[in-house]
Length: 240
Image 1 (cartoon, rainbow, N blue to C red):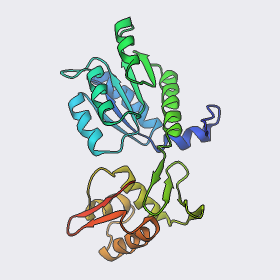
Image 2: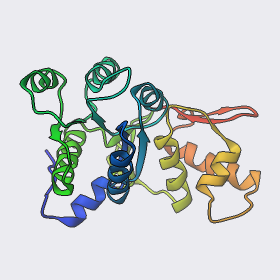
Image 3: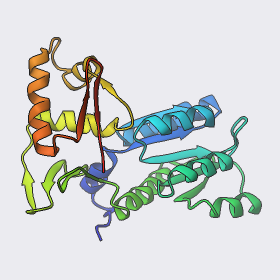
C-alpha cells in the first residue's frame, strides 16, 4: 500500500494540489482565515457558512475532504456529517470544535472521522489532519478514476492507463486539462461555453471545431460512451 511520506515535500504537493475541500464554518472571521490557509494548501475550497448549502455543494461537485465545525445554525455539524455518511461512507471528514466535552467526542467517534480538532486551529495541526485525510483517500483508491473498457486515470500522477494490457495511454496537454475538468465536475452537465472558458482560458476565442477535435480524440482514449454529448446543451462524463 502506498503511504504518504510526511518528510517528502514533493509527495505532499502531489497529493494536496488535487484536493477539493468542503469547509463549513458560520463564524465569518474564522471561516475567512482558515479558507485562506486551505487555499494555499489545496486545489479548491468550497467555503460555506451553513450545512444546508454545504449539502447542495457536496451533491453537485467533486469533494475529496470535508472540514466542518460542530456549532452550525439549524443543522449542526454532527447532524450534517450523519447526512453525509448516508451518501458517502468513506469521504474523509475533519471535525472542528471549541469544546472538548466527552459527549461531543463520543458522538464524533461514531462518525468515522479522520480527526477532531479543537479551535483555535494551529496551521501545523490542520496540515497534519489533511495528511491523514489524504492517506485515507489513497487507502480507498479514490485517487484512481475508472472508465469503461478497463481504462483508468491516476489523478495524482496525471496518467491514463489501460488495465487490460497494463500500458500508459498518451494524453496531450489539452486532453489532460479537459479530462481533469470533467472529473472535477463529474456530478453535473458542463456547457460548451464553460469548457471553452475554463479549459481554454489561455485563449480568447476557441472554435467549435477545435473543441470537437479534442473531445473526439479524448473519447477514443477513455471510451466513446464515457463522455456523453447532450445535443445543444453540453457534456457529462460517466464514471464507473
